[in-house]
Image (cartoon, rainbow, N blue to C red; front, side, top):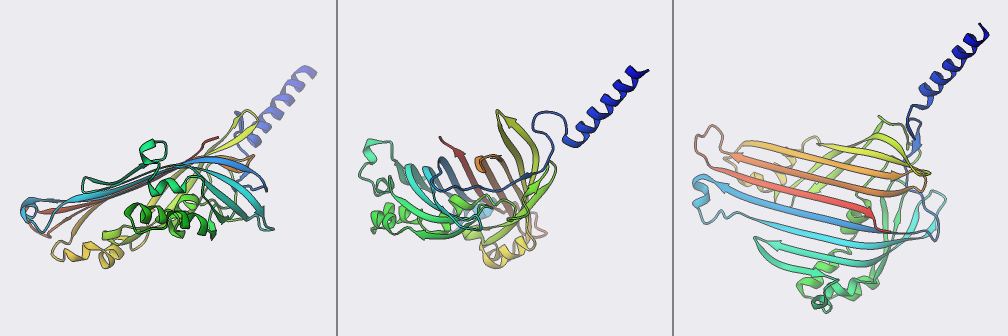
Length: 323
């Protein structure tokens, strides 16, 4: 009888623990989703960013020489070191970024305008090569946002010039580009970062579609699991985004869509997804990637003619620990 009571008691205790903590290594429990900074801390990252815009015409309109399809693509691959200089009382860090390796390419309508690779001997005299070893300083918040660009002057001076490569290298050092490089991932607001698997946070991302105008998306990050790798806890997060309110209307007002006044039927296909692995112990991003793909097919309303304009946009981003 006592043995049966003991077995039942143990069973109740075990079941209670499973209900409280979950089963499996690292499962269950809330965790703080924030970047952690310590003065002197250093880490290397590899970045890949790609932008692509395309236009194609179908039907009789394609025979008109005024309407010529084509596409533009730029790709940036950079390995950089991130060293923490100081941390204030709010957890914001002054960070020194040093460029280690760099690749850059630009293609317009099938023609390669720029193709640089710092690992190639033939590119040692390219203006882009002067960025290798250069540094700039920024301030980053625990939620990943770039609070301000502090100093880029020395790096800008190294690539200053009137050539195409000089201008492209200088654009990598603009506040807008730096924010995309280091602030694309936005974690929960400071003080609101304790989350469990199944919970989520969100933020709004605006895009400049160049010839198409502008638009926005609500990015929703959902915690899929918190797992263990050795003695480290790793959070796995999935991101899915939906177009923000007024997206198409805003593009009609501000972009090339408005120029096709007779083409009012617009078929839109959009996907925007991402994936994050965050080390909860160190507060460092292990991997983060996202890709947005949008296509608009514009046709004349109530017309049986096959005329159509197809516009496409791709924006991809990947960041991964490289040390």
